[in-house]
Length: 556
Image (tube, rainbow, N blue to C red):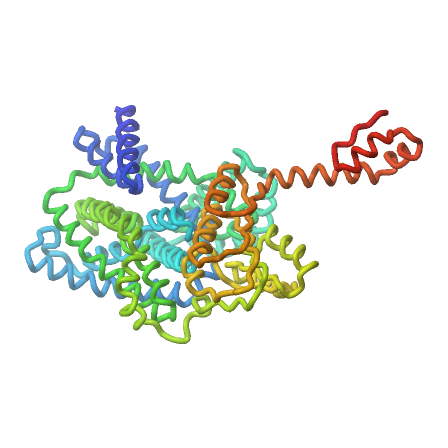
């Protein structure tokens, strides 16, 4: 039956993807299909092992991307903590009432069991949120960063639960793990030397599964916690993003096994589906709670609404919590299926709602703005830009180089826009006129003051979707000046030109031309070439060609 498992899982994933939903819903469905064919999780122990590896690598990947400073922002740590408490306080009495009304799955539930279910339902989906943000190009927008920060805090809450659920008292050797940061220089040296191919993947697996999971488990701690902490330890390395990308498909493949094991626990009954539907109806309360909390932290109502809708679903981490509770006998196994069905239904509704959030905001804008608290969050206020002639969107290496070149000719008439505060501070210390803002975020354009004498906008952002979005917003604001852009791929250049960009430069082609120009200049300036010229070994004809900036031909 092994070929059938792979084929059915692939087909279900493809069918779900075709309608614009995350494939994980298809994997859950594949588990149910396989169960009807007589396959159970107990008959495939390797599937459970792969599922455990998927969860471990998921936490390791989260650690690799974790910016600890972002978690210390009040809207993130306090917002996620208060929402967790509020969700539990809301769900526990609601579940109790449903039990009194005769919902059999809640009949006779203890307070601790109600707390466990409420805790599992309080999470929002990291997988879904990241997909929505990547598709919209809003990963670095303020609302996107807030949503991701809250999701990471929720993931940390889940890891704490998983660690406590282990139930064993850690060994005294667990204190030795406090010395792990002292090994950071040695680990970073190894990280530097593993290269960029399969050795990098192998290094990541060793760090996640051996240094993280195995080492922590050996001293009586939860292996998932070890994977997360080791990921955080590596997050400061320059190649951490590359490592995360290199193990991405391993993580995704093993997580397929996790979702399959959920479906292999049994089919949902009509009563289970009905209860799951009731739980989905309660999601708007989670969204409203997020909106209220985020506006309390002085975010604009629009920012709060966008982030809240991104978090308006149930989570794969809720499934992980329920799976652990079911294994420990704290919850009936059917609750794993109920939460899986609720998760799937929540995705069905969350996808179109996130696509319509802009229309929803326009409809209720007046009411929502009444929730705002002033002065607004420093990152969510009106953006003053003065009256520049040149605007550079994206102040990375390319944007910085463009700024310095323009500054040599047009002093005081240039403005750079950069979304990372640390880069803004760096540029200001270097004497550049740079303000914080994310040109890939609609809010940026809503908050941007007008510059009547603006002549040229340079798009130097690394994300093509962000550059394309910026062009659309400039056109919406009736900007009539010139637009130039840097791209990496030819197809990106074509789409930008079609959208109205005046000049497009291919990054690699420009680098190649610059490299050749530099080599030719070095050759012409070298002593051997100068000596040859003085000796008459380069003809007058070739001098004429060189003067016209054509390729130099040697006659020697």
